[in-house]
Length: 127
Image 1 (cartoon, helix red, strand yellow):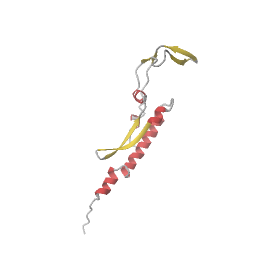
Image 2 (cartoon, one colour):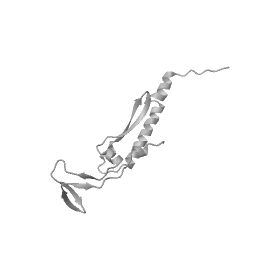
Image 3 (cartoon, helix red, strand yellow):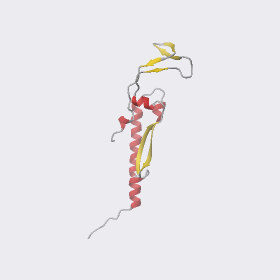
Image 4 (spheres, one colour):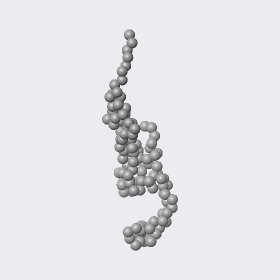
């Protein structure tokens, strides 16, 4: 006796090509884990950048994809690092900051730059 299998196109579409199916749910779990890892790796000064790290599921050419993003003004500089650069006041006459426990004022300061912290790309690895 020969048994034939006829695939169910709707079942295949649900399983492999929908956000609600098993593959979509796996992609959501992967995205959530990657966000946890990225938030753990990113530095916390005010928490704004950390809170901006999110994921979402999307469809691309019929496939479920996970998009991890950090929608924050400093995200790219934090991720890629910066070269030494001058900082000048934008809305006030002088900069005010603490230096060696004392309040200091300056019209410009040379920021030494920052090393990259690739909190997003470092965590793009299989789980």
